[in-house]
Image (tube, rainbow, N blue to C red; front, top):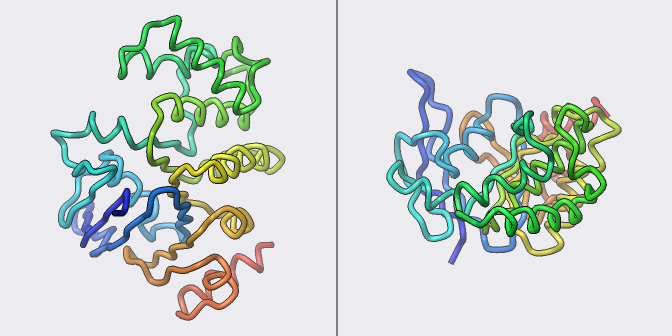
Length: 243
């Protein structure tokens, strides 16, 4: 049984239909990269899975929980999300930022939460920066703290929304390395990304969105090397020209 099930999903903003009947299942342990032009509905799709956006039609189920307003606390116990803006609390240290969700959401005792936060910072290679405040961390380091914070709640699914787009080019690699390690470890992930090299390397499946629908999906080689539809052919060509 899929860990994420999306059926006939519709999302509108006013008169604009942003998601137009999306169907997508994600298996446990699968890494799915979602690509497409700006405005194709990629980020909105992730936000609907985590309940950050209400849906106007269809159904989303994540980790066996139907995503609806009355069950958002339950959904977010199982579905973590990392954003392009790091969303760290500026007045808390890296360690405190990772500990806080455990204390507030899972009611873990402070000492236990801090111990777990220290282990997670070690996992993302930031032990030496545990007492640093966000303003004293590079963008790549802040994003790694955000990843550790998401992992602190032991999610079954991790949603990553353009998590490298706010970073300087030299910092992208350090964040993608951490995500690649999570993928190898069996974490179920859905990644909205413009890093085609990373999608090719880390993803089991690539989903191409166009005008609010899934236009194509398949293995990275199938989609990126042998695109079938004109929109994907044009998208892949534009990416190559940028490179």
